[in-house]
Image (cartoon, rainbow, N blue to C red; front, side):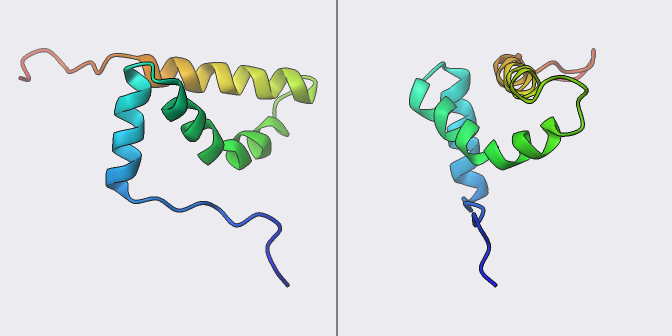
Length: 78
């Protein structure tokens, strides 16, 4: 039996490059990250007690905010 949607695989280097470009607010990189995590977002949305569209929107918004967060380091670390 074939899988309905095979997960897209990328290397760690490609992922980190996409992440860095998304942090620089490059729309294509952001869209590619959303596409990579689309199935995960859809799966997780089933466990949130909201209408499906609202759950997907909420998860997507949190994901985008997480991407844009600056890296914070504990005090005393370089």
